[in-house]
Length: 86
Image 1 (cartoon, rainbow, N blue to C red):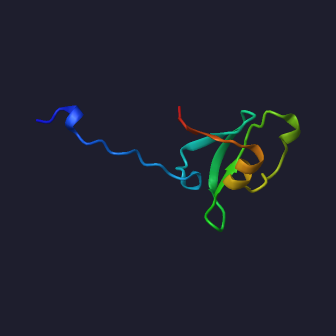
Image 2 (cartoon, rainbow, N blue to C red):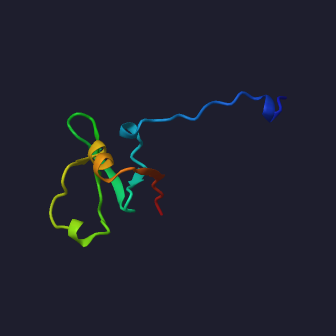
């Protein structure tokens, strides 16, 4: 039997943001939550913000095709959070 301090530790898997699992949501610097919504034709993660805090950012109809790179550049830094389903 091996004691826990003798067991080799494995490093956690770190994924680049564009390859984050779809169970990950992103929070921007204003506190808005961005949810993955598939990928674009180049394979880049697309995001939607279903409930923006600012009324001027809310609208009807189809959302702008936000990519992770675009959201990070305009509203970052982004913080990753694991989505929890109730």
